[in-house]
Image (cartoon, rainbow, N blue to C red; front, top):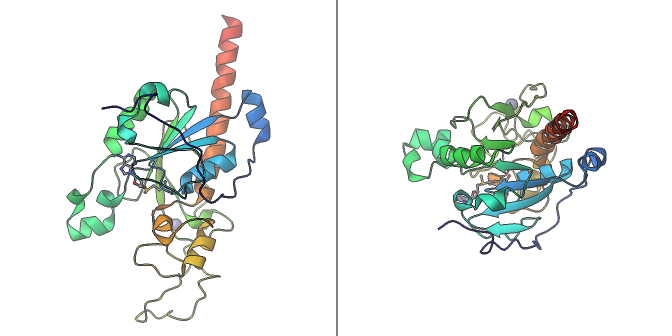
Length: 262
Ligand SMILES: C[S@@+](CC[C@H](N)C(=O)[O-])C[C@H]1O[C@@H](n2cnc3c(N)ncnc32)[C@H](O)[C@@H]1O
Ligand SMILES: [Zn+2]
């Protein structure tokens, strides 16, 4: 059964607050109100926080409870949302589960153990007619994706490639050289020679750093280690969110011009 407007209760979340000061007040003023972004498969809000920082009012959707999600939240299946609910937003971001597309699952030959939700969610997003972004790991079947990496953003210290497909153009920063990462692996030559609070780290299930280092490296101070493993750094979606705002403004201006000339 699809979740309709009556059954969906968007609740203000009491999760720990993320640093989410809007950086685009002029763009928001030009639209006449704060634009609304629907954050599908939101988990604890790494992606959502970047869009909030870019100037969006964010509402998250996840199939599991997300007590640490910092914004209004709806617990439901993202694939069964009512189109009327979706149409109350200006744009949509989706981060469907990545396990079945990951290198690890391919190596272990158990990729079929997880759902493959990219194609079905793309259908939902495309039929909304809204600008959208789908995020996933390298190896996932995204269409003409751009790649973001921690080396592209000042202040991040995480090696984390993520792909982003969008139905509008996104420019990318220059990709930096990957520095040697901190390791807890005694077999590696650089074991013990780097400092996980200063050098680049990898935030994964196996892990090569403390939770304090992972939080600091990702620019996320409110998540558990499991939530960090799933998250993308807010800097990635802040960067995309600014371009999304510019796209929304350009579309709005073009519509206004058409109306004036009609
Ligand atoms: C990779 S995590 C998202 C991470 C998030 N974008 C971030 O940056 O913090 C994927 C999330 O999808 C959720 N999920 C899985 N299937 C779902 C479904 N059918 N509907 C909604 N959420 C779902 C999982 O519970 C999980 O929290
Ligand atoms: Zn890289």
